[in-house]
Length: 461
Ligand SMILES: Nc1ncnc2c1ncn2[C@@H]1O[C@H](COP(=O)(O)OP(=O)(O)OP(=O)(O)O)[C@@H](O)[C@H]1O
Ligand SMILES: [Mg+2]
Image 1 (cartoon, rainbow, N blue to C red):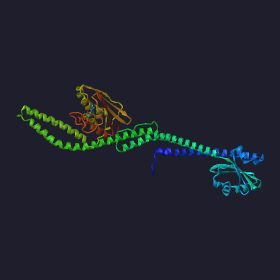
Image 2: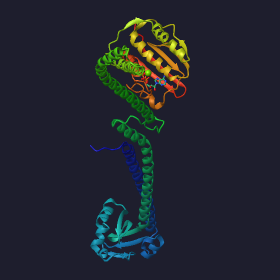
Image 3: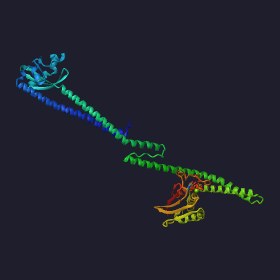
């Protein structure tokens, strides 16, 4: 089936209707005027003929009548021979008696006049290529008196008027077509943009937003579509993130397993070597350095193993305050050492509820550590809890270095780190723990001002 654009569908029917109206209305008007004018003309000429007959002017030479009334006169004999005529410019063929009688319908008119008892009849006839209105009058001895009123000028005026009217109609139709094209274009342009944008989205480009050009239903549609694209982008990113986490989890598990065993052997052998009395100071230092580095590798491996731990949750009823407080107590000395002031603002209304305390502690600890590392010159760490409908939220705000907009997108990716000695698994672990609890992690940050991390998860009774 042929495809018509919305613009064509809107504009074409109206344009056709308008074209029909603007062509036919002038034509009908011209016809109506012509008909009325014709009637008036017939009545007037009829009046002249009556006067001519009644005053006996009919017996005057036909040239006088032509002069007096600006009409042509033709008189035909009983056998339709032309007895007299003021028309001298007729072509030869029309001088032919039979042809002329036929053209002027003389036999039929005569019969009508005799049978109907009327004194005269009117007909439109063309002679010598010119239109005439002919008035017939039957005279004594069966002769026919024809008075021909020239209609050429009227026909000409009618033609001119029709042409003017049609010209005007075409002009107006052109104007209407132009205006309706502009209106249609204005209406369909934003739709076209939106269609183009949907094609882009279908091709996988979710980064752009469609420009809102109108404040109407199409504008609303564009806003809704932009929002939908944004949500689609977010869920796609979440999916990619989840996939990355899963892959990294599997890899981490196998790495950790392979590394841990040789690492324990290395640590044991180094410690045994360190017991030997014959070691020089340099050798002892080197061995201690080896043990330190083994310790660091072990921390990384532990992180990997935490990250790869299966997703089963050990849900038990706990107090959130106590759980968080136990981590903060553990960290207190460290925080004081780094000149970090701790502000605690726990909501007193949160009841005990079901969560995996160990995993939550681990996640919370990672965030506190990050905050501490972000405030090397000291600062303030504010920890608050509150309930939001059926969710419990923990908010940690630090006054540290902050995170750039570029980095913020990658924080939950495994192994993303900006620290020399970081593994980049801290926040990936936090995310995993919160996902397992059916919760969310949101991070907002301003470079040079600080960072806020918000953990929210359902209050399970
Ligand atoms: N509170 C914060 N302030 C500033 N930057 C932060 C903060 N928290 C996280 N970051 C940034 O996010 C990155 C990733 O953090 P994440 O905890 O995942 O890994 P890490 O801290 O680098 O390493 P790890 O936690 O394994 O020691 C950090 O390297 C740091 O750049
Ligand atoms: Mg960290």
